Image (cartoon, rainbow, N blue to C red; front, side):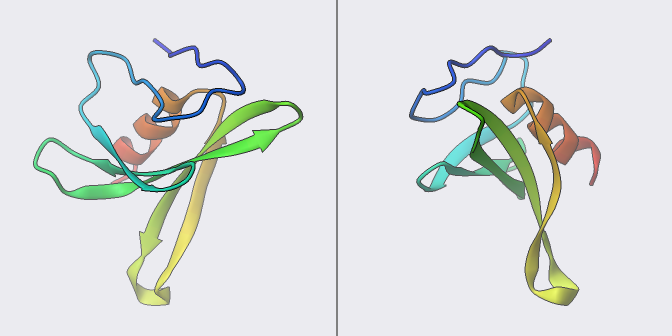
Length: 87
């Protein structure tokens, strides 16, 4: 099940009600994704794409001390699910 978000919307993306995570603002168009225990599992970033919005899933890679893009998705739910399952 995916969430429909208007392309030019601002603010925190709305996840489906059965989501197992919550989003906390980290910067404009960037949110920390926290699991039920409050542990950060990655970041969700809104990325403009040809007049629309895509959602980038990002994860911190400790050995390189840098963030790595996991993928870009058309819904926030899909990006978050990728972070949740790719642990």
